[in-house]
View 1 (spheres, rainbow, N blue to C red):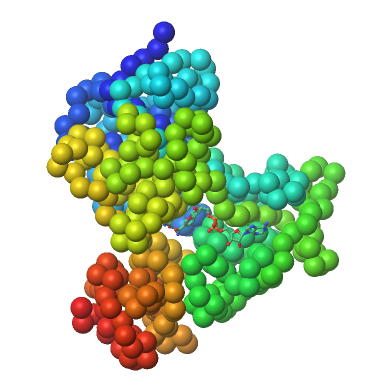
View 2: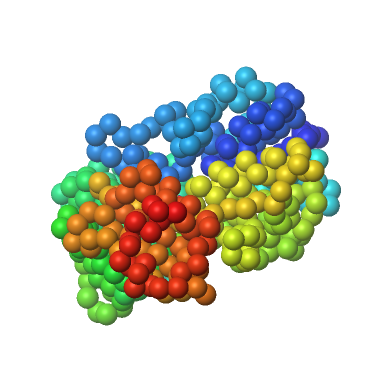
Amino acid sequence: MGRAFVYVILGGGVAAGYAALEFTRRGVFHGELCIISDEPVPPYERPALSKGYLLPEAPARLPSFHTCVGASEERLTQKWYKEHGIELVLGTHIKSADVKRKTLLTAAGETISYKILIIATGARSLKLEEFGVTGSNAENVCYLRDLADADRLVNVMQSCAGGNAVVIGGGYVGMECAASLVINKINVTMVFPEAHCMARLFSPKIASYYEDYFNSKGVKFIKGTIMSYFDMDSNGKVTAVNLRDGSWLPVDMVVVGIGIRPNTSLFEGQLTLERGGIKVNGLMQTSNSSVYAIGDVAAFPVKLFGETRRLEHVDSARKSARHVVAAIMEPNKTDDFDYLPFFYSRVFTLCWQFYGDNAGEVVHFGDYSGSTIGAYWISKGHLVGSFLEGGSKEDFEAIAKATRLKLAIDDLTELERQGLGFALAV
Ligand code: FDA
Ligand code: NAD
């Protein structure tokens, strides 16, 4: 016994919400579409969890940030799904999938079948245990991926006002949580193995701009080392973080942001995987023609760079979601996904955007002791990536356009001299 749908979206995160909106725009009949999520709430804008959700004053709370408010579209509350005849199966974990039979099995033992499946299972936080460290379960050690994690982080943070936090990891979660902790009047030390923060994206010069800013807010950086073990008290609370270099830091709380792994396990051995994700073509279709994948879990061809990539950012989740629905409902009118990678972050009063690829040589511009800084990446004589902090809407649009055009660059010194003016003149 079980339920049957024409379309099933597995996963109820950002991509699921944007796909649902697109389905209704293109005309889906009541009862045809179902979203299954192990979270207890309808899809929401996950980026809010490390920003507005952690504010000490007037923090963002649901229902204010359900999708699709992040792109200034409709806010899809539980009522909206009901009105549109979309079945929301919440608080339900899928424990196995059979793509030959076109069925999903819930943890409670129900079989849900589909004609077309869209996999939007996102990713999970990597745990310290996967690096040989124990103690992740301690009550004052926090990760941040979903609402339950965010609620836990808020509670721990509120119990540590004026105390000390160690943030493990110098990526997105690390930087955004460090800023939020400072705003909550907690003393922060960041620990990560690389030579500078945001090592996957930033050049050393860009990183040093942000590290100086964070320093000015009281954040300390311990770089080039990793933690080796926690000291615990008799209640199982972490009291200190011991580092590989032999030093130790007393703590009231720990936040861990050491990367993610896409949730592919249900489909391993059934679908082709690449770059740690589920491989799809330009229509977001997997190696099984009835199954599609979008968002963090999908490895898709980025036409602009002639390569398959897996991106872990909200804009790609939103746009791949819209694209898959077009591809499913109007396959003959839909071209291959042609996506310009776009990442951004907001911390304190800072805000940066990045477009394209950070490959090749980097040319910095702007005033690195001021408030507007930028960089271009040049590979094989073409502009392939652009970064800007502190620009206007028009400035950001200009760097996006210049990157999308992959303009030929023959004089790096001249590009540096023109700086933002180069993109604005395109
Ligand atoms: P997403 O993770 O949103 O959703 C996956 C869903 O599938 C979840 O609801 C999960 O519970 C469910 N699921 C998984 N397996 C399941 C199973 N077996 N059964 C049932 N349900 C299952 N990006 C950016 O560009 N700018 C930003 O500022 C931020 N900020 C940010 C902050 C924080 C704290 C995080 C964690 C992430 C960001 N991101 C971001 C990244 C962005 O949020 C991310 O790229 C998107 O949420 C990806 O959307 P998906 O729908 O692919 O996965
Ligand atoms: P990340 O990949 O951005 O950073 C991981 C960091 O972990 C690295 O920078 C490194 O410093 C650190 N690290 C790796 N191994 C370590 C170890 N053994 N000990 C200590 N540090 C170690 O991942 P994240 O920061 O955990 O973010 C998780 C996901 O959330 C990513 O997909 C990210 O894109 C997404 N996210 C995005 C944004 C944004 O786009 N603004 C904001 C928050 C989260």
